[in-house]
Length: 196
Image (cartoon, rainbow, N blue to C red; front, side):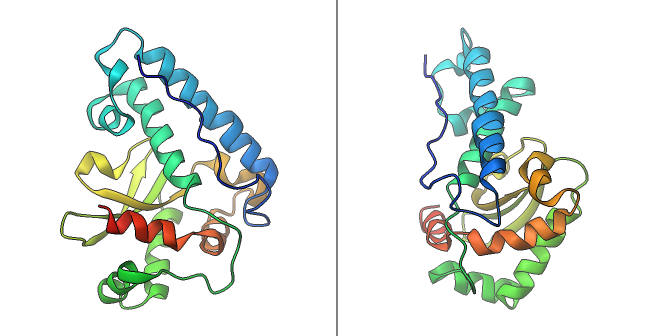
């Protein structure tokens, strides 16, 4: 049986401060994500999912299996897309050109993305994904859903579950979403776009 392990962060737990605190990383990565990993490993035993890759499980599973697998996939993409805060942090390469042509400007894209995250009712994720032709799609995904379930390639995500921001921002979800732009590693996002 395949066993999933907690993602190792490619940066120290305090690198994303003040946008995301070391305390939040400790709970969000060390407790929440670890819990999903433990739950999925237990749930997979003796099932047809036991030897599947994570993305395949997310595409095929339902119920608790999907919830845990989806949250692992979502969080892995989320934590790997960040780096230390930078001023005037903007997309690069082909993705930057596509954002410009589809949304008119990076600023207009940011507004649309934050609006989608701020207005998602309850818990979930806001995503920027690409279809097979490279067209960009902003979507709200509730709970543990992921755009791969719709045949899209996920590029960028902001987590709007309260555990992602409540210690740092309390109920100010839009403030949290707007702050995250400082820590997006656009080279990672461009790589995902190129490799779709």
